[in-house]
Amino acid sequence: MGAEAVVALRGHSVVKKRIPKDYRIAELDTKLRRERTRLEAKIQSDARRAGVPTPILEAIDSFSITMERIEGPPVSSVMSEAVAEDIGAVLCALHSAGIVHGDPTTRNMILSAGKVYMIDFGLSSYDRSLEARGVDVHVFFQTLQATDDRFPALKDAFLAGYARNCSNAALILEKVNEIKERGRYL
Amino acid sequence: MTVLGIEGTAWNLSASLVDDDEVLCEASSAYIPASGGIHPREAAQHVANNIAGVIRQVLSSTDPRLIEGVAFSQGPGLGPCLRIVGTAARALSLRLGVPLVGVNHCVAHIEVGRWKTDLVDPIVLYVSGANSQVLSYRQQRYRILGETLDIGIGNCLDKFARSAGLPHPGGPKVERLAQESRNYLPMPYVVKGMDFSFSGIVTAATEALKSASLEEICYSFQETAFSMLVEVSERALSQMDKSDLLLAGGVGANARLQEMLSVMCAQRGARFYAPKSEYLQDNGAMIAHTGLLMLRHGIQTAIACSGANPSFRPDEVEVPWIETH
Image (cartoon, rainbow over all chains, first blue to last red):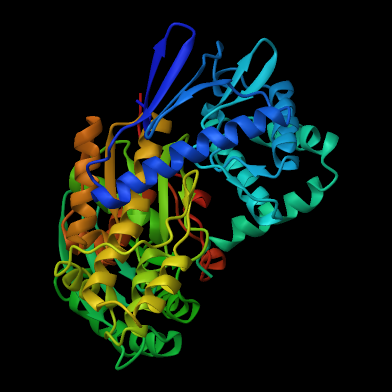
């Protein structure tokens, strides 16, 4: 069961609807769901325009988005060094388009027809800062480290893919290390 | 097995004696700042002045010859406090002729929660003054799935409370004032994956003091900050495919936070557990209990390795005592 939205398959389409969360007060809940739905749709289509594989948008209303269905497994279940390298290249393309994903976990990427598709742009934003890109990579490393024992090799493969078209990969890695240190009790 | 544990990372100095089944004895001495927040030097002075007393109280409740190990909080925490606790623990272990074991304070919060709720493998939301993390056990370690990118939720509440002129600790006062309002003022809501950030809320809330009532601000502050914590806890349950959530750490005593977590869990068919507040706040029993688990699994700390570790991370600790299937 997903944390944020209910996803329903309708033929060749996917309808992603943000359901109300009873734990949040209505003002905050409605605001977050509306903003996230609108932003997700906008960023997802901008990412696609920039050459990042993402589902094609079909329709949008206040709290739901209808989009093309991408067939394939989440990368978490087919992870390999080659896949990690592709993820690096895709994230570099996204960052180069001025977008950060915000939640680039291994469950938010689908391997379909040999391509890594990015889905769930619900926490994305337009941000070109090293800081935001560093947080993206940090989030990805954290899910990888928490769920896969081959982490060191996968991390290297990811960085190689990222560095292919993004010349600032070393700077990003430095930033990731800084972010990792920051959350600590010193 | 009977183990004596000493906790002293920040504000609550506490010694406790536990066996495999229960807490046998506990003696505590809280440091309450005269003004402002926790001052590291004063906190350490408090530990130095009171540590002999709390240990003596616990020792006098039993025959010291029955004690089979001495556990102490090795970190994370304030270095000056940790060093005094370590010195006392080393002396006690040498005097009693029993093994010494250095315990990670965060892991101890989790372990006492598991002990008191009988959970095996939950997602843990650990919220205290300096720490705010979402953790999940996997292969001999508690893995950090997400955490604050800047300050802990407790420090965030205390910082704001200080600028509003409320005495330390601010959390309980903010909680009480929040109950007096239902008027929500938007505050920065920052969640990045399973990480989150609180510094923007402190700034926004402090700024709002100029134009809004304290009750409104406290209400909006809690609703925003806690919604972020609940959102990442839910994401962790989803990502790790788990159905139990355990709350740990002193901020966990907040009734509104507990309510929100319990509503979230009910809505997705998960189960929510929080130990009693005496086991949410810093306590000696959590150190003694975790020390006991470590000793039972052959883990001891040599004197040479027993130095204070102020930035000790929970994922540095080997956890061989959890059996999952």
